[in-house]
Image (cartoon, rainbow, N blue to C red; front, side, top):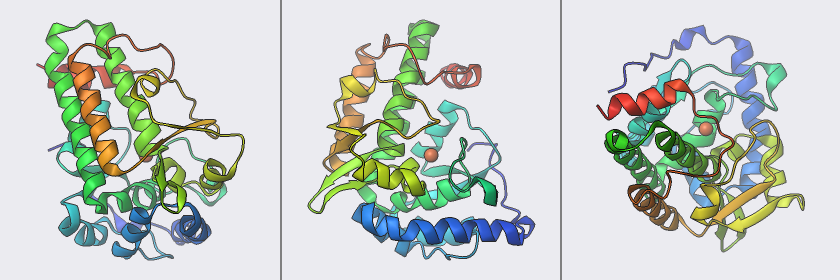
Amino acid sequence: MNSSFVEQPYQLYTPEDHKSWSKLYSRMKPRWEKYANDHFLKGISSLALQPDRVPRLEDVNRFLRPLTGFQAKGVAGYVPAFVFFDCLRQRAFPTTINIRHADQLDYLPEPDIFHDIAGHVPMHTDPAFAEALVRLGDCAHAAAEMVSSIRIEELTSIIRALARFFWFTIEFGLMQTKQGLRVYGSGLLSSHGEIEHAIASSDVQRYPLQLEWVINQSFAIDHYQPLLFTVESFDHLFSLVNQLEQWMKQGKLNHVAPGEPGVNEEDLKSFLDAGK
Ligand SMILES: [Fe+2]
């Protein structure tokens, strides 16, 4: 298992840290009730998060593990792409343990414990969603198995395609439900402003997810997303991951459109090392 996992030194959280959690949680709650999909709402209640305390990962895992086998595992910082996907495959979610400061409640470019525990982990209580995440981990393994037979530019393109798929589904995905459009992407579920913008604003383009579009679509992380994609269900999401893997094996991800996100040396090296 990944050696970059860390313990959560819970006693080091300050009263200000707990206050940040409490503020973030209390202002998200009514927005979740309005805009989040049912699987998330069920998940957040089954995790029994406390509204006014930074959660302990071991408490979260006590509720989470019996449901899908997933666990939140503490990490101190950036996790290279292959390592991240490999963790998903092993049902371990790399979870940032620090929390944003009270003056950064609205936007933080990198993940924190609110994004990871309140945005991602409730989704991991859902068996169908959990299976789709594990399949994404399988996809990264299939990519690593190909590294000796493809060029670096092609590997870079595959990693970019995987990152785009992850972005437009796991981070910013919308779902068509009986109650209307609902959010399941964690970037939206942890953003007080953007969750409403994603569902209610006429400035957002929303289209049924097409794989050929998503893998070629660049994005910027520093403003609200102008383009979002919908799925019908998590079984639908799972079938899209299967298709993504098939396309990768057929070489269809080897030359996706250039642009964001960038693929850094660490990400590339993580795939190259795994493929040795
Ligand atoms: Fe995230």
